[in-house]
Length: 290
Length: 162
Ligand SMILES: Cc1cc2nc3c(=O)[nH]c(=O)nc-3n(C[C@@H](O)[C@H](O)[C@H](O)COP(=O)(O)OP(=O)(O)OC[C@H]3O[C@@H](n4cnc5c(N)ncnc54)[C@H](O)[C@@H]3O)c2cc1C
Ligand code: FES
Ligand code: FES
Image (cartoon, rainbow over all chains, first blue to last red; front, side):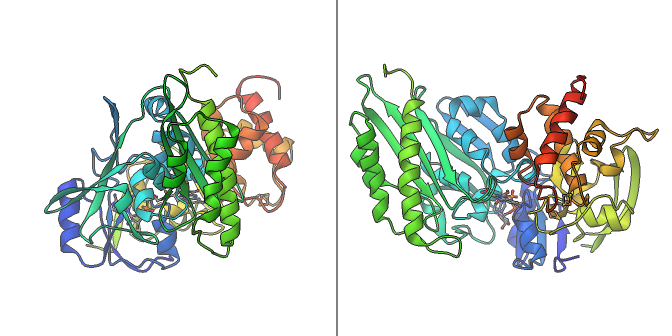
């Protein structure tokens, strides 16, 4: 057995889990285990207490209603990927999920676990940023909301107190007719991306860009919204030249450097991926004559 | 809270009960505690797929699940694939026929993955299969014969001539 010793708790009520989290020192919650189990095996994580969330009912709901989507923290990635309602209302999420690990990891891995693990390349974190998600947090003493922009504190560190956990996220849906694209470059299918890009575009009646969201994953500790490129696109009539110009903003970003890829390579990937994501997202918009 | 637990679960259709340390993963439980050594362990941190088994019909990495989490669930391992009379499962037969394995270390995990995948996608293309199998590493075959075997198994499972 590779993990260090821990006491195992598998509460069947949320309140019980939150009480344990408040009371126990050096406790860690276990969701899908697809990141935490390897960390336990490598003893990168050595909690004294493991609080398994898998037996708690009601934490995995998926609700698409009136302009918003709510997903419970324990919803499995595979269930979200296979949800026809999400595919219809939030295609960016579905497309990104196909790139999160493998079928076997998505069968167990959860959306809450992915958000809290907060890998710089995690597709779901990038998607949450692109869609302006709100993270719902609970502790024994109450609940609070955190905007996705304020969720990452630093590298792989969500802004959660030790006694807090994520219970779900809310996403305001884009109107019908919007186009979305998630694309990434990874060494092998299912690997964490070196760089990923998420684009959403909404056309107006004249075929100009009424609304835009552009986000990069894998270039910094948290997702990077490309505000300058978004401003450049807003209100404009799309063209290959415009998309190329917007994507060229990526040449100036402050990209991280690691053994996988140097910063210049990430900037170059970002430039290409953003252009492709914009072109593809635009091709997927509806309601304007092309 | 105690360091080990008594659990009951179904493995390959049979009810099994045993004591397990809480920090033991499901693959070690199947191999060490139940003696079902057909489930292989390559990396024990989720990257190789050798340990893939079916839990309630879903392919999962048995090294990334605690044995205690399998309590009350139905687990299918490679030992549970062939029929009771020894007739090979169509996937096993296709892997024999098409040289879908060499050393066989990755095979139990690959078959578990394909049982679920082919049930949901009865008529996949070669490229779909490569993506479906991206979480199963094989150091021997170069994958071509695995994909050929999977395509043949899919045909057999659809009731067509392999
Ligand atoms: C081979 C392989 C490939 C992978 N590829 C990718 C990939 O391409 N992209 C990607 O994004 N991920 C990838 N992953 C990781 C992904 O599969 C995990 O599902 C995800 O990172 C964590 O989700 P989980 O539910 O498994 O969480 P766990 O592993 O259970 O937990 C992860 C962390 O989050 C904390 N946590 C979990 N839930 C909560 C909660 N509700 N509140 C507070 N804290 C919580 C845990 O304490 C732990 O620190 C891969 C994993 C493997 C094994
Ligand atoms: S042993 Fe489980 S994935 Fe390698
Ligand atoms: S046959 Fe040897 S690892 Fe696949």
